Image 1 (cartoon, one colour):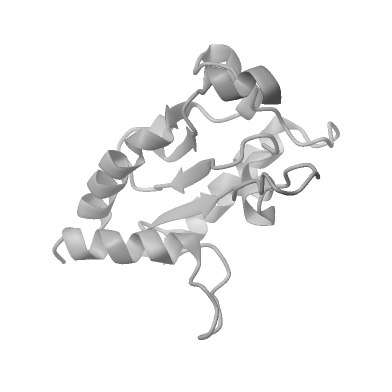
Image 2 (cartoon, rainbow, N blue to C red):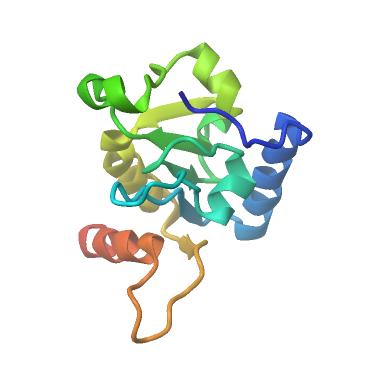
Amino acid sequence: MATRTSDPEIPMREYEQRRTKLMRAIGKSVGLVFAGTHDDHLNDTFRPHPHFEYLTGVTTEPGAILMIDPSHPHEARRAILYLRPLNPELEQWDGLRSPISAALRDACGVRTIYRTAALGRFLNEAVQRSQRLVCLHPLAQYNQPISPDLKIFRDVMERVPG
């Protein structure tokens, strides 16, 4: 189940204010923040990318993505959280995850939640509308892999004219 950070002292409202501040800073641009993935070969606990945790407080969802789209006409879709699909077979061992519901929205503090399969459709729509993208992950040096947001933006730019 998606849950907040282990620090219960940070109120959910704080995460919302952080996202709002970021939206003001990026204007009409669209940005993505990735939680990262868990290495199944390591026996330690998953820890999300610090930017993702700072903006959401969610620490239990490897593969999650936060899309920031300040110019979306519907306020509830200016911040969208995408979570991996449910996998009942895997969850027998790793723990059950919640279906998308009002309770999950309350637990995550984000009003709009979809599964990651929906990202492409909503991202293309956002890019066509805004025509602007912003990288929210640290940029990599020339000899390192590029950031996950830049990788996706390169793919989107090939498919969305302008």
